[in-house]
Length: 383
Image 1 (cartoon, rainbow, N blue to C red):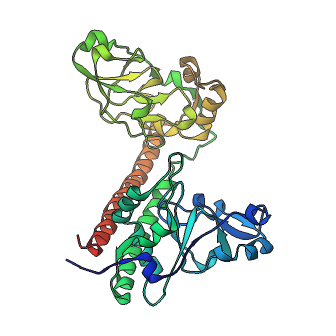
Image 2: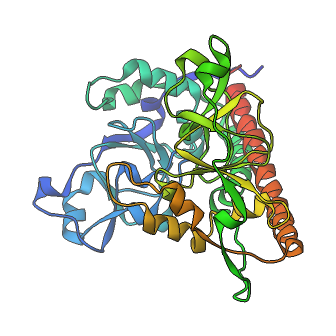
Image 3: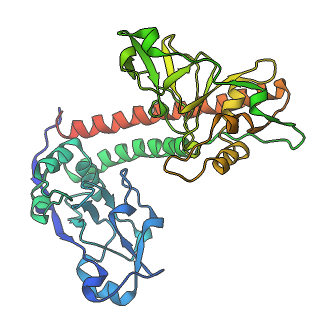
């Protein structure tokens, strides 16, 4: 077990300060110029979102001398979204920041900026700032509190080895996240494919069931809009209710191979394909339950096509603009779908499923290497 001396941040830093606003020196933000970093420009993983930078001019930057950023400065949020951390890199300089971010400037021969970054992201630090924060509408930390935060400090050469290991893990998770976040199945539509109405290739809301009568004091699985993960189509069966407690919307009987299409705000893409389904499952009337005609269409082809603009835009056009924009059963029936031959549908589905397997593998990588990061940081703390 590693056992490094605990030190306070203020003992191994040259500067602990915070920024201010351009208005404090008589300036306003510009459309271009010197980067001005706010909390919203720092992602939870520590990367900068440069599209979220504000801008100031040279005169304003010079008047905000105290909060001019340098390469290697560690930014740590002390107001609002506490605990956001980032290391300033040369590519965003010159830059400045506001009072919601503290600027921590490590003494270079004592403390690696990236090592401090990882220590500030540790569970130990997060738990500590939870006990220190003050405020009601918005939580705050003082610079004094930041300076007194403690962390284990190994020799510089050990810090560099730890950082190299953690950064390597982070690069893997970053790459995997890019795949997961940006993947979207796409279907190349041949203009020669006939356009058919959905209601002519799939049943819509074919079976209803009253859970009060069917289950009484026994439990059933209730699938509502919150049971579907938007975009991914994953359906949760964790919501269990007694039949007598069923909401009035619990009416749609579902079975394996059905597709759930959220008719309320379909633009949010709460669509699900039921690979498996409990026998006692009942869905909300907020869904249109689609039952494919197997001689005409493959169920997963319908499901994947729901995410394509050629179909999704039809739903958006029909959903209205009220408090609960939605489409009705008639709208669903008349949705026009491009329909290739079954063999072509099978090929499309197989290709997309292969892609989705790779996405799931990358999700597993994120989980594995996220744990490696957590374990390594815990090792530094002597766990």
